[in-house]
Amino acid sequence: MHRIKFKYLTLFLLVISFKMASAQRDTTLSADDLFKQARTAAFDQKNYPLAISLSKKALVRNPDYTEISVFIGRVYTWSDKQDSARTVFNDVLAKHPDNEDASLAYGSLEFWGNNYPRALQLVNTGLKYHGGSNDLLLLKAQILTDMKQYKAADSSLNVLIKQDPKNAGARSLSDRVKDEASVNKISLSYDYIWFDNRFPNPWQIAEIDYTRTTPAVTLVGSLTYANRFQSNGLQYGIDAYPHISKMFYAYVSAAYSDNTTVFPKYRIGFSLFANLPKSFEAELGFRDIYFSGANWIYTASIAKYYKNWWFNLRTYLGPDFGTISQSYTLTARYYTGGTDDYFMAAIGTGVSPDDPRNIVLLNNGVNYKLTSTNFLLEYRKTIKLNIFYISFGLDNQEYRFQTRGNQFDFGIGYQRRF
Image 1 (cartoon, rainbow, N blue to C red):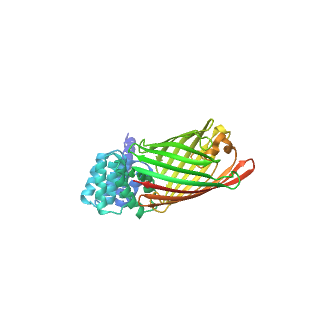
Image 2 (image 1 turned 60 degrees about the vertical axis):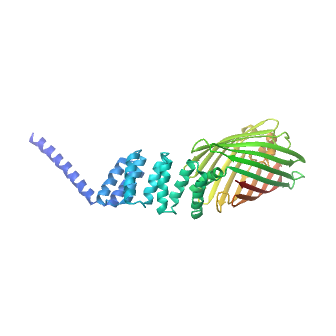
Image 3 (image 1 turned 180 degrees about the vertical axis):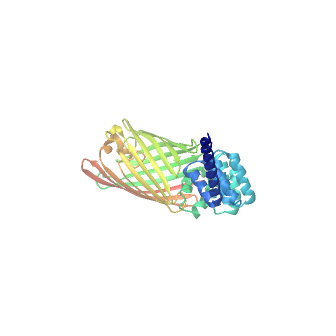
């Protein structure tokens, strides 16, 4: 009996000693040490209660460690404890109204909760002290975009892109806002296409279109004239870009022509786009190009903003033509200024159903069974609300088995936003 009591007493003393040793080690840890452990618990282990506990112990060591207080507020936000996060952020800003991180974290919390007026108030207060903050300017633009105040969002993005041209997030958002900020747009374009072997006469294509943007949808009406095979034709088209949610938008297209020598009799298309994290965008869709019969073509693409660059990889698949991969195109833009100021280069294979210059070559699917390589250069420049562009394209096409020819395309265009 005495031996059993002694064993339990020994175990009890060992536990007490361990706890005392742990407490002693804990008291020797600095605020920085505890903060480091808290970040590891939050980011690596996703253990938010432990991260908060360690952070509070760190504040006991150093009550004026504002970075830790803001971190606690962020962890409360990630834990869906918004009221606790608000309490922390309000305490920090009451003591330090010029704290940029607190303004950003608190503004983000309200933005994610769709409390846009409060989020905008917090961001504007932060910008009074840090007018050049890239993070605050981007968050302000995101808030204004969701509030459908596109012109104000565009203004914030212009300031941000001017001081940080490599900000991929700003450029990604700016693409959307530019169209939303300008309610109306008129575009004119002209292409002259010359062949060295395949056709004896050049082709000419001219287009005029009008774009109207509303909060729910962007509509584009177009009239295209073409002279091909010594025949003239007109095509009437309408495109729509409905806004589905913050993440998704769509592309819906239809066109008609009564001259199937120059254009398809009709063309329809649909794509669903998803705005993904880290400035990625993905697309899935289909096209039907109808001459004397339906030609169903499926498309997929992935796009990415990276600093001053935008990359897009796209494929068109036409299983009705007996092959799987019909067309690939890799496009890259290098932005020299705003959204419509860039150099563009594209290289690809096959014929794109979205290319008005060569869409007629899809007739009967002949070109899907032959090989082609194409290259395109384009330069765009904005002068106030006017956009000008020039382009040059080269297609090397196999138009008969083991017989190739070159196609040269010279294009100019003008666009007016108002």
